Length: 634
Ligand SMILES: Cc1cc2nc3c(=O)[nH]c(=O)nc-3n(C[C@H](O)[C@H](O)[C@H](O)COP(=O)(O)OP(=O)(O)OC[C@H]3O[C@@H](n4cnc5c(N)ncnc54)[C@H](O)[C@@H]3O)c2cc1C
Image 1 (cartoon, rainbow, N blue to C red):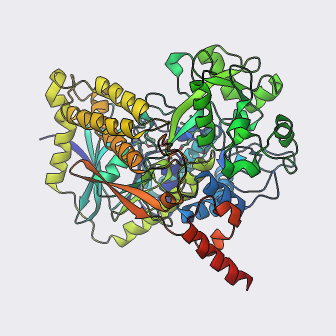
Image 2: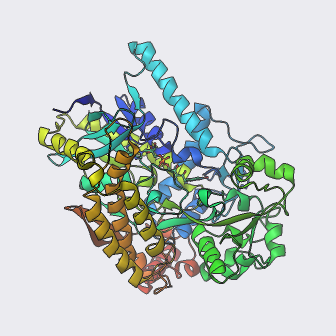
Image 3: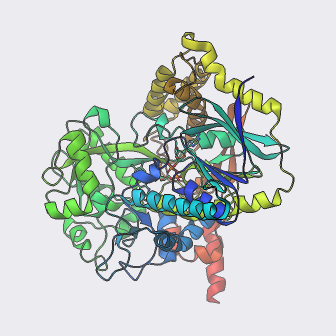
């Protein structure tokens, strides 16, 4: 009989990035015994890597900013496919969540009159990103961890035990959720170091596991982003939406090969950096799409004036939303105007002083010096698109963050809907604070309501143990997990990448089906004690499930929008804007169905002018809008 350590909590939060920590704080503040589980070391999550900042309409840098402008920018950035209610909650609550962080001890950069400084980012009408140099995520995580420690100190004073109400289980991977009688009963995983198994019984689980980038060959994501939360949710009976929408960040490092994909923050462009091709041309002016033409400068002179006089000039096209910039770079490289390493040039050296660059972008300076021996105060950087963020995720109720399975909640990157077809930079850090808090609050309420808690059955537990041990049982005779992973990454990169075609997507589904069968035979030598091959073998099942969702949804959506570009359907189609593609699992096979998008409330609709709406809405929707506008006028 395998030894299993057992725990019982009111709320279990899986993931210790910003969303997970904020959720755990809220659950603990509601008096719930809360566990935080993290696959990586505590403090090492994507949130800590976030550089540019957190978007919140505080109006510190421009008094014209407010939640309505932020809401409009977010909907535009997502090409109107966003869950409008999530975008509304996010825009209205983000400032409060940022100010609250300062009450926890965060210290953001300041304006000259002592307010929180806000910087420019793509798609945001006003400077809106609260930041700490280019190390904002580090400050965010440090602050949330500090808050957790302070709560543990309070608990020590009250109970004599620091971990009596809030305990962190670091380097612990969850591989299974348990559902009994239709509701959450707990989860199961292993300690990465010892390989020992652990069971958490709980009525409320918050998924905060972040993204899926490790299914791609060129990515800014680190090793733990294998779509675990997405796959766990589906296996438990919840649904995923918008999985065809992946954000390829326009600027990842392209040289040397060992660091290909590592992120180059958008702040470089926000602070004046421009994109040039191998002919020295600032090419983004050629790529402003019609939907954005009114807001973006047409000449270099106007674009440059905007940095000092944003009220009287239009924005530089380098600050278009990320999907537009990534596609433009892709086109330039394809047209033979790329750099020797296959990227384009990002130049801030010729536009800002070394002192400015070192003050505003210290991490970027360090990154390029250490990894590529390039001094960005003197030379341009070589950059190209890298798989960065998944807009798709667990389908949740916008107010409560609840998934379809009672007791299951999701927040942060693992949840879907908020960003529509494309996320604006800076909107993730604020998203995870707003919805992390909400998820923690409602998970705590659910724990209160779950008077009689479901027990995890012995059969379910045994099945989880069996699945976890299977790769070790097959030993070296099984399929090699590293080979399978590299083949998966190649398939996703080549066939489900930044530009997609029907024939390639169909081919990808065949290749993924084949890989799925081979993953069932994956084998690993050695035992359970710190065995990365075994860990990867278990992650592969999740990566395959999530990749199948992406490929199936990408094949189904016959239009181009945000993070989904079909060469054979290059235009946005207003009829597709009304559709969410929803994925679920049946017997390990992905099912896809179409579901109507929630309809935006009229008063929110009226925040946009008709000319803009006509770019996104069907004639039928526009007629409804006209009727409402007519009534409002009457
Ligand atoms: C280099 C980089 C720079 C970025 N810069 C910005 C920026 O400036 N502004 C912005 O808004 N966004 C930025 N982003 C995006 C943003 O950082 C992420 O989207 C966001 O931090 C996600 O937060 P999260 O809390 O959802 O998850 P994460 O911070 O990604 O945390 C996920 C957690 O889940 C854990 N986990 C995963 N699977 C399991 C499992 N099976 N069991 C247990 N634990 C698990 C992980 O160990 C981790 O603790 C950046 C991303 C990257 C990669």
